[in-house]
Image (cartoon, rainbow, N blue to C red; front, top):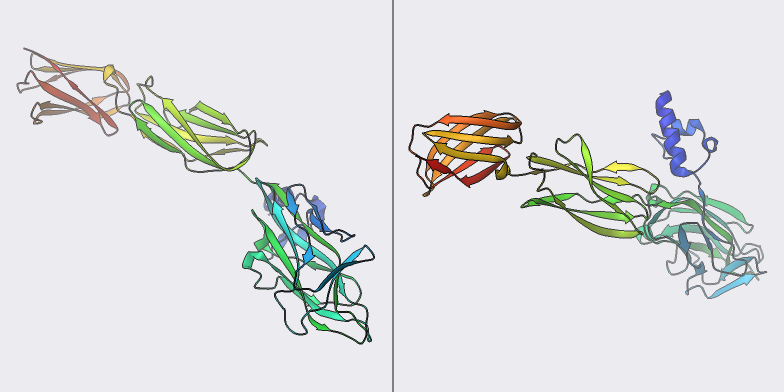
Length: 391
């Protein structure tokens, strides 16, 4: 349990960028049942001090915050608050009447929204005081503004309404728009039907998207291996290393690329010339990624099976004996098959070879035509060549 708590707390703090003591251990113990979201920092703030522009976070931009065109009057009051006046429905939500604001992550980043704090009131005029919308609700573009994230009554004095939108507002890669609706409006004698907003703050995190890699593809063409892969959410100074192994255990660097900039998607190709690797019947490739922060990740391994290189093995027939000499890439059972020019199998001789140089003499009881072809093979590859027959 102690190790579990340490790991969870470490990951929690790293993701949320908040101090260790900001979240209680009791909350962590409940996290398997109830999701815990740190408040993070402000990633959008609108003060309405004579401006509709907002202040973004480090890794995002924000839109203007304004009432929809269906609200007849939009105006600042005293230079410190902003209101939309008249037209608010006396009953349920009118989806054409709202206050709207948006947040957009910068390229290569994502947003986690933890809370929204809305400082607002209805009009304090009228007899009795308190005209305007008595109820508010918040919706978002994630579901096309169809359902409430939160709703509550609204008083004629300012109050801070804190909304926790939930896990749907984590890992946001594109623009998210919010709409704030006022409804259940009433107008007292001499009152103004105003929805008044003093401040909107959106808290959360904006952080760099992790580099994601598509599958590593490898194909063999003659003595060259064509390798390709796709990188998503690239970050400058990340490195992609193609590594090669002849045994699937010990890897060497075949190629490296240093990312120059951020992009949603980039494709890479590399041709590995393996003509000199005659002793390897199998080649293993993997993609090793090093992020700009030093994090290492590895792809799944791709296996290429090479044909045995004919230049390393010599074969000839003399005095009813088959001579096989040369370097074999791996220990195991091989077959020597001699074909006539019509494709008919004349002999099929199995033999055991060890890794490295071998020399075999196999007695044969059939006459081998002067024009013949021999194939040496195991389960992983083969070579074919003409053989020399001496009478």
